[in-house]
Image (cartoon, helix red, strand yellow):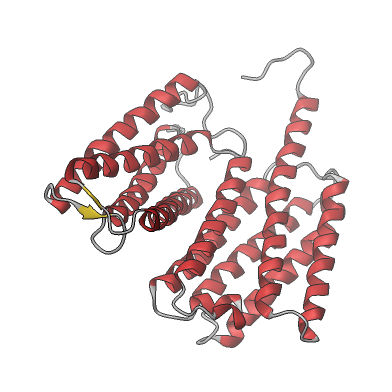
Length: 357
């Protein structure tokens, strides 16, 4: 995977996905295959009978699962056809593709599940007849596979940042909506992951996969970033990797079972962000000044919220939600700022009059 363009024209054995028509043709083909496979699977599962919109044994549940599988397979297929066959595959690349494929699958699962809940509430008691059921199952898989395949062939830092944002938002919202304890917010955000139900599983899995995504983004966003500091990019990368690893640990070590470990990694995540925000101007001098100032503002807000929680004015849930939002907004903005800095540097270094491929 490249930090800017996922596949280069002329890479040995790779499909030239720089052509928009080629990308569309391949994506349409993948979508068509997904439609047929999902429709046949629905025929085998429902045996050409009607089914409810949502709940156990529903078309909504089947379509969400089919969309998740289609998204993962289509993303993996997109990365496979765009890889450079002349270069050996590194273990980290396999990890990156697996993490991103899983993220696409979970995004599809959560998005279609939330849509199913909305439709079920809109058509209370309604059932979907056999033929429309097959068409819906196929259409959901086809649309999802089409989008995931295109994402794999076009992926860059900006798209990766968007994927992280969508993934986190859908995961946390889905966990909130399906929480068995309606008063969870009176404790803390981590209370969403304390039970043994599907909501807790979704919350913890969201944190683990999001942590893997952050570590992936940390490496790609800081590779090639120009800096006069000899270890500037490496230091920023290390801070972001710590944030990602600790975020995954928050999902692995539940607060009700591993209290001290959970709180330690959660605090460490904030500390790593603080170090990166404070030292950003020194480590990467070319980063936009507005982004540096924003990092200091975000850090100040988190500190103020912590003080207000300490005096009993805010709940811990409110502090965690706002702090998490600010930290990951900062990471997403850093990815985009780093990509812009690399682009500007490449433009300056390119000989006058030359054209990009």
